[in-house]
Image (cartoon, rainbow, N blue to C red; front, side, top):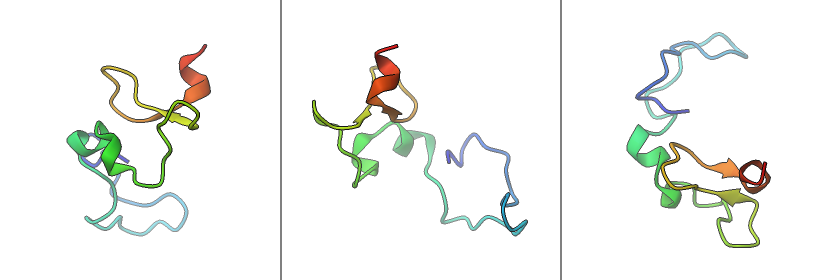
Length: 63
C-alpha cells in the first residue's frame, strides 16, 4: 500500500484503523530494495519496469 496516495484509514477485513507503520511511501514503492523478499532477477517472478510506481509480476510486462 502506498501510504502517500491512499486515502484508506480503515482496514477492509476487520474495520480497524490502519497503523501508521503499515505501508510504504511513494519513494519506497519505486525502490526495489524496499521489497527484500521479492526476486527481481532475470528468472525472478517480479519486475520493476522503468517509470513504474510499484513492482509488478514479470508476466504482466510481457502482455
